[in-house]
Image (tube, helix red, strand yellow):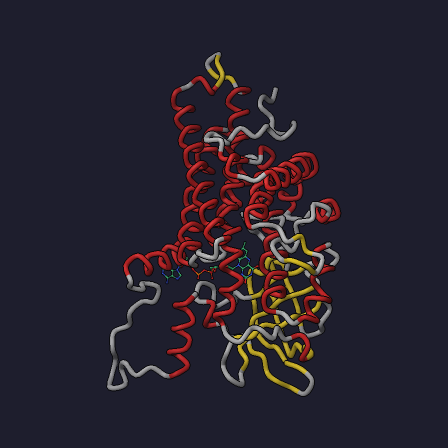
Length: 425
Ligand SMILES: Cc1cc2nc3c(=O)[nH]c(=O)nc-3n(C[C@H](O)[C@H](O)[C@H](O)COP(=O)(O)OP(=O)(O)OC[C@H]3O[C@@H](n4cnc5c(N)ncnc54)[C@H](O)[C@@H]3O)c2cc1C
């Protein structure tokens, strides 16, 4: 007989040990409750099977769209204009049940839509954002390349000016939603001036090929793609006019990183809630697991981490809303919550014993999913080095290379420019 199955209703939310919801406005709480009900009722019962099959849950999109979250903080153009904290509460509730769905939303809304909203032309905004807000069009965001991950500013995809438009050539890797997105925001180097620009490429463009990245152990519902741009023509109107250099990626990443910092909070509260129910249902040595001291210590450690993670993210969000957040603060919090989240996942996985490695108990799914969040939007290492640079005033992001030969120390203009861009990132 299976005890303590998670196939029953999703467990109640019992993770708010410090009554942190008191820091939310009534509107933020209302949105949180709406998203929580939707996720528990519609996503939790079916998502483990999609995850197992590494499929995106397309039938869930209409219901998900009706939550009115896409476009996030963007005002106008059919977007909800939510506060950063309202957005964050939605991200937490989605990730509490499934991190793939929260990543799907973040890529679509906080990378693709936000880039168009912040850096696109009026025509691009008018045409794309209202339809993207309804998920009639789905977006993806293509920066990373096979040879340029953490060092994204060294990207080698090119954009060549041709009559009436641009020809894009190059490769992108890991692009979330990339196999089926209608709208790709792609970053490529303008080979007239060497600066990074951004372009919108539509699904069906004959110069774009995509291939799903198989065998992922994390975020298995997210369809990550390898993308090949081969003589991919886009008209002049597809260029995002406000992007003039790589530094513009930061305008987007500074905001999206806040949301990514909240994702481990969502995963952690879901695993904690799951474990709290499990330890009351599951019995060993004639008593419930929750009566053992070592089990209680694990729950207390998980609960403590969650309160700290939540508070750090809350403070980061408030600093952003006050216009005072630095990108080093976003990096610090993103790195820290993903590291603490990993500990919470590991403790939760231990508490479920053998069931802790089964996808259908959802804890193993979250345990795996956090690994991707630890790495994307800047790996843990690169984000702590960004914070470390602010703390010490010394950058350790680039390995110091010993001077060689008479030209040592004389860097070319292109190299100097690339290094300055990378340092800003
Ligand atoms: C599931 C998933 C979804 C993603 N979605 C997208 C997307 O939608 N769009 C997109 O553009 N990209 C996306 N990415 C790419 C992601 O941003 C990169 O994977 C990330 O930036 C790391 O790059 P990399 O994987 O090439 O690792 P690398 O840069 O090769 O790093 C490998 C290791 O070296 C370490 N390292 C690198 N540089 C330094 C340094 N200076 N000091 C110390 N350590 C260092 C890293 O921390 C890491 O541990 C996604 C990735 C994943 C896994």
